[in-house]
View 1 (cartoon, rainbow, N blue to C red):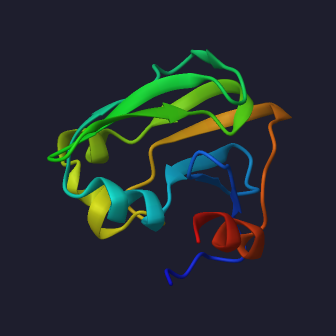
View 2: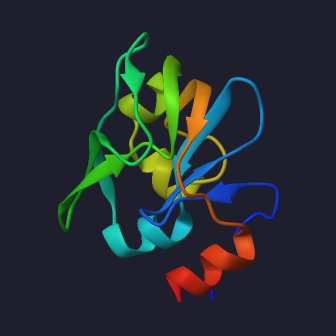
Length: 122
């Protein structure tokens, strides 16, 4: 089973978020394994308002195109240009250099602990 960092929280749609301010959002290693090689990212723009549980972009792999969901509500303050330029970062470092965007959080959706997410990801 994949290892999910205990310092992060997780959405049922396979995104992770940290507790920093602004908060960093990415996709989990479980999602990356299911997707295969990531080849394209469509992320929200800086300044965009996102709502917890809503579609905010896409992640495209050699296997499929999947929707990205925001685990929280708030305003996007930064996007990871390095991951847009080299989407393989999401595969190689989903919990590190492959982060997707940062958001000033105003509200949260349903978030799971690492243990709860591991059970959900099964």
